[in-house]
Length: 235
Ligand SMILES: NC(=O)c1ccc[n+]([C@@H]2O[C@H](COP(=O)([O-])OP(=O)(O)OC[C@H]3O[C@@H](n4cnc5c(N)ncnc54)[C@H](OP(=O)(O)O)[C@@H]3O)[C@@H](O)[C@H]2O)c1
Image 1 (cartoon, rainbow, N blue to C red):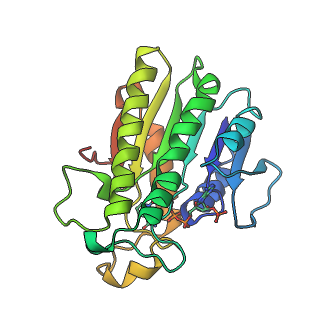
Image 2: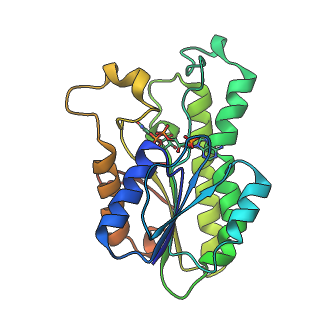
C-alpha cells in the first residue's frame, strides 16, 4: 500500500503518519512538509518539501509516484501571524481571505489535477481532504470566521465536483471530505478555552477515527462529507 500524506508536520498529519507506520500494512508513506522541519524518521517514510499551494511544486511531487492507494490532505490554516478569524464582516481583510483560499482550497484542486493519473487503478483507492464542519452551508447557524468558513465551503464544493467527474470517468476512487472535530493542534490552540470539557480531540484519536472510517468505505461513499464519529455531514 502506497500512501501520500500532505501536511505531515501538522498535528493531524503527523498523527496519521505514526498511526499508519505502527499498523505495519503500508509499503511506503510519502509525506510533505512546508515551513516546519519533519521530526518523524522511519525506513518506510519519505519526506518531500512541497508548497502544496504552488502549481509547479505539486506537479513535481506527482512525478515521484507510479500509483497511490490513499491520498490524505491535512494542509490547512485558520489563523496566521497576528491575523485571527473574523468575528464580524467589518474585520474582513482581502489578504487574509486570499491566504485562506490558497491554503485551504487550492491544494486539493492541484492534487486532484496532478495525481489523477496515479489514482485510476483497478483496486479501490481514496482521495481525502481534511475539511471542517464549519464549511457546511446547511449547518451554518452561528456565522463568523467568514474567510475560513468560505474557504472550507469552497473546498467542499471542489471535492464534490471532483468526486462526480471521477465517477463519470469510472475511476475506482472514493473522494471524501473529513471533519476531525476540534483537535488539540497549533491550529486550534487560540480557541481551545471555548471547547466544552471532554470535547477536545487528541490528534491520535482523529487519526485512528479516519483510518477506521476508510476501512469501511466503498465506492458508494464517493462524494460524501464525514465526521470523525463516522456520521455524514450535510454539504
Ligand atoms: N485542529 C482542529 O481543531 C481542526 C478542526 C477542524 C478542521 N481542521 C482541519 O484539519 C486540517 C489539519 O489541521 P491541524 O489541526 O493538523 O493543523 P496544523 O497542526 O496547524 O497543521 C497544518 C499543516 O499544514 C501545513 N501547511 C500549511 N500551509 C502549507 C502549504 N502552503 N504547503 C504545504 N503545507 C502547508 C503545515 O506545514 P508546515 O508546518 O510545514 O508549514 C502543517 O503541516 C486543516 O485543514 C484544518 O482546517 C482542524
